[in-house]
Every structure is written in structure tokens, then in C-alpha cells.
Image (cartoon, rainbow over all chains, first blue to last red; front, side, top):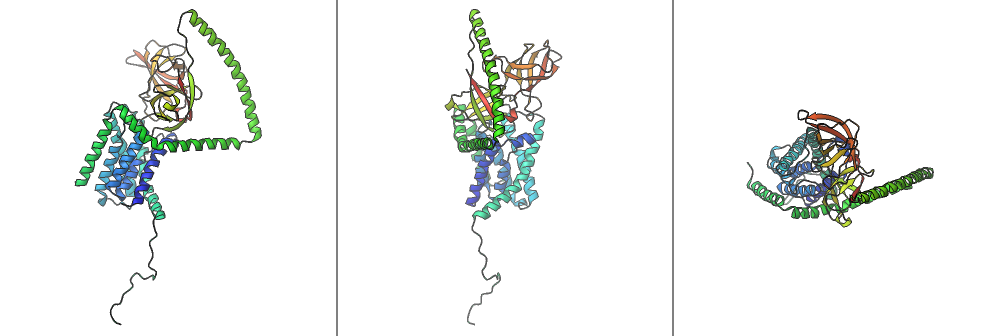
Length: 183
Length: 269
């Protein structure tokens, strides 16, 4: 697991939760606040593995619930489940393809709020759910779908910027023959 | 099939979540404050940036514009002073009459301004966060008003520096109200339409004999003890009969624009 990747992904999760709390224009414009944590978990599960996706699920879920009226910890489980399933089958996923990233991101972003709502409905709380929630669900799924390839692009760019450049072969010959023995 | 490591991780995470969910309210609130405290520098930074932007826009205003605004504010100040004097007389008269009738005196509510620093990141709650907490004397269930004095909601959770306000229309914020001109009592409940439209709420439990018409003003009734009497909530938008005509229900257009709140007043006795 690349240490920089872990730091960047955790920072992104922290920033996402803050932006979802303080930036109101998507809600005013679309009637729904997109949840970008599932798409980040998808990125973590496809690139790093179970460790990072679990870390993002726990930290992101806790941060999200601490600023929300959700019962503390309830957002962790849906994110974690999405991460586990994707990580398990990532060998079968064309993870370098943008459309595959979009579809997986959209599916995870659609599934996570549904599971969270089902869990909340099993508590004593009464969330606001109506027919217009379907619209919000669609917006969340689409936003998550679009953000997943964006994470891949953003983190690749950041990692390139913060890593050492690969040294090119100074001779320019990749198939240089080494002659051994006496000439 | 999942691998062994997946099963182990699933069991550990499930146990962690169960442990969190089974905590008492007090412990959960403490953890929430601790974890949410990580965002305090960001909220502070956002607040400072907003005030710097406001100061910059004021500094960039032209002198004629400022003079024009100053004159308009002076006029408004004069008018409000006159009105305040009239109200003062009315309040004194009201207090004298209450004393004569041996009715309890009504103490005026104190107001404290607060800035809205965030909204609930989840779409199924209608709450905001404000930059006042227990440090400023804020406690649970205090009413929250818009800058114009319209009802917005109540304090639902208090931190040291920040508090959560549950807004009108959330299932956790039901308000006893009365229709101003007909004096009919009802309860403000969430809109059946769902969470997208936050400008309309339902007015329920109205008597079947009520003569409601669209356009009537709705104010808090003071029943329940949380919200003081007389705060403007909104205006009746339409009325319909329910339960075979036994009861009336109305939709109320809220006076406060909940989606555009930037500052609020917190009122306490």
C-alpha cells in the first residue's frame, strides 16, 4: 500500500465530509447533496485493497455521522460492505476503464444510502423519505458515478507530482547486449 | 466466496459499529463532539473567509453608494425608533392590564445572533449547524428564528462551540401553532412530498369546523413550552378535508427561507 495514497485518500475523505456540510449549492441547484464517500471507497478498493477501503469506511463514516443527525457509526457499515465486495471481485473488474469505474461508482453510491436508510429505519429515528427521495437517490448515484473516474485521475496526478520520476535509461537502448568473456 | 481476511474484517467492523450504536446518548454525544471537533479549524477558517469577503465587498463599495445606503438606514432607524416607542407604550399598557387581572407577566425573550456554518450532509435530515454552543449559554430546545424574526426550528444538540438546529419540516421538529385570524390550533408536521421542497410543511390536527382559507397567517401557539407564543411561521397555502371530512389539513408556506439561511437568532427566556 503506497503511504502517499493512504494520506491523500484520507485527506480527501476528511475534505469531502466538510464540503458536503458547508457547500450548499448542489442542494439548492439539484435538490440533493451528493455523497462522494462511496465513490472514494470504490477508488480505495480498486487501487489499494481491503485495508485502505476499511480505513476510509470507518473514518469517513465516523466523520460524516459526527456532523449529521445520523446515529453515530451507522454510515460505516454500508461503505465497508461496498468496499469489501468491490475489493473481492476487483480481479474481474476492468478497473482501468473509465466506464467500468463510472458504473461501479454509481452502483456503490446508489447502494450505500439505501442500506444506511434501512439501518436508520430500524432505529427509533424517523428520516425524511418520500417520492422525491428517488430523485435525490438518482442524483447521488450519478454524482458518485461521475466522481469515481475523477478520483482515479486526481490521485494519479497527485501521486505523479509527489513521487520521484522514474529514471530513463541514459543510453536510450532498452535492449543493450552485454558481451561477456574475452573479446 | 469471500476470503478469510474479509470475514475477519467484517466481524471486526460489525462489532465496532454495534459497539458505537449501543452506546448511551451521553457517551455517543461525547464521541460525536470529539470526532466533530476535528472540523472546528475548518469551520473557523470558512467563517473567517466569509467575513473577510464581506469586509472586502464593503471596502470596494463606492462612496456615493455608501452615502445612499447610510441615508436609507438613517430613515429606517428613525422609523423603527418611532415604532419601538409605540410598542413600548403598548407593552407597558399590556403589563398594567395583566397586573390588574392578576395574569402572569410575560418576560421578553433575549436574542443572540449566530452564523450558519453547515448543513446536514445526509439528505434525509433537515438540520443546520450554527457557531454558538454551550460556551455561549445555548441549551437544547431553544427556539431559532430567521434574521427577519420568522420561526426556523429549535436547538437539537449542543456542543461547546457549535450547535445543531433541527429545522421546521423535520420529523423531529413539530410545533404547536394557531391560525392568526380564526384562532384554530394545529401542529406543524413534515411535508408529505418528501425532503426536496423545504418551503412547505403540513398543518395537521385541525378541527373539522375550522374555516381556513388560503392566505391566513400561522403563528406559534405557545403550547408545549418550547416556542414562545406569537412567532410567525408562515401562510396557509391550501386546505383539504381528511378522514371523511372529520379533520382539516392545510399546507403552510413557510415565511423563513430555510434553504437560504446564513444567519439566525437564538431566543431564550
